[in-house]
Structure formats: C-alpha cells, structure tokens
Amino acid sequence: MRVALVSPYSWDVPGGVNRHVEQLARYLRGRGHLVTVIAPGGESGEGFLSAGRSFPVRANRSVANIAFDPGTATRVRRILRDNAFDVIHAHEPLVPSVSLLALIFSRSANVGTFHAAREGGSLGYRLAGPVLRPLARRLHVKAAVSPAAWELVGRYFPGEYRLLPNGVDLRVFNPWGPDLEGVRGEWSGDPASAGGARENGIEALRGRRKMDLIFVGREEPRKGLHVLLEALPEIRRGFPGTRLLVVGSEDTGRRMEGVVWLGRLPDEMLPAAYRSAALLVAPALGWESFGIVLLEAMACGLPVVASDIPGYGWVVENGVQGLLVPPGDAPRLARAVMDLLGDAEKRSEMSAAALERAREFSWDKLVIEVEEAYEEALRVKKAR
Image 1 (cartoon, rainbow, N blue to C red):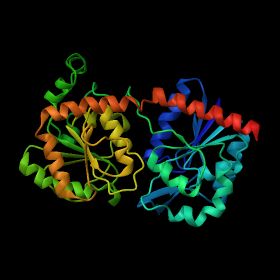
Image 2: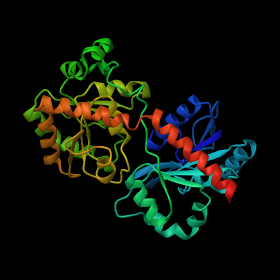
Image 3: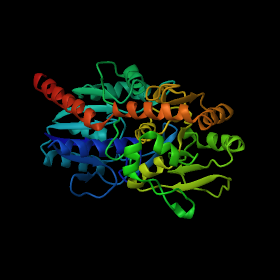
Image 4: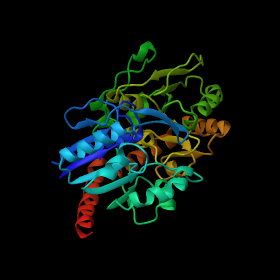
C-alpha cells in the first residue's frame, strides 16, 4: 500500500507521537509498503515531506509545535493531490495542525490514531465538538494508543475504536547492548559485554549495573522531574552511591549532588542510557496516555517506579514490573525507589517480568494490527 503517516507536531522536536510515527514507518517499509511521513518542520527528503514551519502553542500542560495556516493548508493539499495514497494515517487527527488538514483534503481511506489522555476531560474537544464531529466522521477507522486515550476521545466522539498501542523496537531496545561510558566525563561504568550478557542472562546484567536511577523526558511540570529531585536526597541518604541520570532535560544551573545531566541524547544512545541504570523513575503528574519511556526501559530489562496514573497503570502492573506511587508524593516515591534498590531479588523478578511485558508491544506484532486497520479502512471507504 501507499501510506501517508501524518503527524501534527514538528519533526524537529522529539516527542512520543513522532517517535511512534517514525518507528511505525520503518516497520511498514520493512513489510514492503511505500510510506511517506508528512509533518511540519524538518526538511523534505526521501520518505519525508515537510508541511512547512511550525509555531509553539501551550497545550496539555506542555508545548506543542504545530502548523495551521493558509500556507500549510496549501502545501498539505498539494502533497495529497500529487501522491496517490491508498491510506492516510493521521495521528491526533483533530488537533488543529497538519493531521487535521490532511483529513480535510483526503480522498483516501482515513485512519486516525488518538494519543492524548487528560484526567478530567478536554475543554478544547468540548468547545470544538460541533465543528470537529463532521470531520471525525471522515475517519474510516478510529484507534487509540491506550484505554486512557480511548476514554478521552470516546467521551466526545463516540463510536468504535481499535486499540493500536505504542510499540517498541526490540532490535534496538534490549538488555544486550552496551552501557554508556564516559558521557561528559561523568560516567564511570564498565563497558558492557553483550556476549556475556546473553550467556548469563539478567543476573549478569544486575551484577554489572550501578545502583543508579534514570529519568527520561522533557523538563515540563507534568513530567514530574521536580518531584524526583525532591525525593533524591532521601534516596541518597539510604543509598549514598546512587545517582540520577537525567536524559532529555538540560541543567539550568542547578547543582545537586548525585545528578548527572545528560541532556538530549542521540536516539542511538538512548538504549545505552537505559542499560546504565538499575531503575527507571517516571514521576509524571498526569495527562499521560501511555508512557513510551516506560516501555523502552522495560525492554532493556529495567524495573519501573512510576506514578499511579491511568496511562502508566495500563503498561506497568503494580508489584509486577515495578511499583506505582501517588503522583506528586515525593516521600512515597523515595520509599518505593529505596524498596527496590534494597531488594536485588525483587528487582531481578521485576526485570524478567518487564522484559516479558515489553514483548507484548513489539512492533513486529503491532505492525500487523496496523495493516489490518488499513485493510478495514479500505473496505469501509469502498462500502460508503
């Protein structure tokens, strides 16, 4: 099939939706489909067409870089006119950006995947519902990445939805590759021995890992990094050698003992960053539909300590792959982290369970479900 994967968010800014689109494109191409990614930002080239410049807008307790202006509309309309796509797969298709424009101008079979979750509902969906509902009916198949995302969109746009979760590339995210070594001169971990790790299994990994924590995410209030930083001194009193590796957020002049600011790492270094820690800590305050970083860390064999919010609770079973704590509660977060740091047997059991859970979200499996959604959209379009 000729497939257009459309993201509403700037291709220049890392984020969960764009990572989903990028990995899905790679797996669809691996199965022989002709895939073009369309998004604002970036530079047009093989397999990618830019819809033009984006601008930042505050949304979902974050900043979204979107594009919705006459020039963008003209470019999207021209792209769809010049390419005979069988399927338009629009991600966040009702966000006022490139995905919505693609849905407006599409003459193809339309699939829409909804990613966002918001406890308490969406004021934007509620106010814009009368305008957006006719556009939502242009979707031949609707999907959500998690029950939390399904609950949000289904509240305002009822109907049938497929569950098409975020996936993880197990060829990239796994326990067998190298750790970080010498990052900014602050990392002193030993080089990994991939062969030895394969032979000796998870116990070998546990033996050579530091008692370090890792946080991965942009520094936005809803990601909860400030809660983890508040909890860190208590954790280090119990386990003095523990450090926090912070990926995706920059040091803005704060000087805290035991924090290693790694900033934004290249994608190829992210698996090594996960392998360099004993636990992932994800203290988000809410408005998370899934948590791709949880899945990536689990695929690398890490247990998780995360906030007990709907999007995370669907990925991580409390007490199985990790521990869930009330969002915003730094003392409870510290106790959960220390419980796992002090119990190597429990960490080993959770590591094995995390690997097993991550396999359920392998792109090798999920890409087939996406293909089935495309085939259904083609049938529905033909029948209308």
